[in-house]
Amino acid sequence: MTMDLQALEREVKDCLYKLTLPQLKEVAGEIKQDAGIANKPIRAVLKHILRYLESEEVEALEDGGKSILLVVKAKIQEFMASPTSSTETTQSLPSSLEMFKRELKIKGQIGSPGQTDKLSYLSVMRQIEDGLTRGYNRSAILNSVTMAVTSGTPLRGYLESRPEMSLVQLRQVLRSHFKEGDGLDSY
Image (cartoon, rainbow, N blue to C red; front, side, top):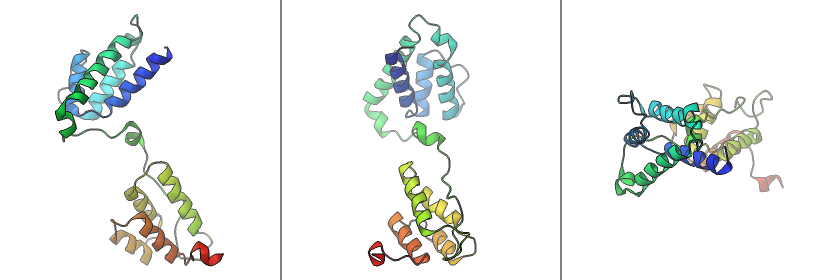
């Protein structure tokens, strides 16, 4: 498979993840793969299309499947050009990376300050920063920190009662819990 064919295949697959269920069904019809998908959920239809695009039948074509990928790309471009596609509120899939992303977990437990077998303030902060760089949102980070706090502690109760807390507020609460001073204080 040539580089431009691989790039086309990647582009088409990435765009497929952004389509709604009716749009995916239209794509399946366009490439004659709509048999048996009438009552299927969005993920099943998407898998059906992707399986076909990666099949030996498509790869065995003279052009390596480029013609089929171009048909799918044209259909996707038709959806993107349509004014209704941006205002549709039909169920659509998250991006391909988000679909397979695992739940964020803080490694270790957050206990009372000074416990040697529990996480330190810096360790928790590093894991929060790592979660941010891996693309986790505020809610996922807050949930993972809450689950890492030893149950029955006042900190856990407080975090569970504040699901709308921002990450800045979370850092302040953790700094207070661990009795950590500001960076300038220690200097």
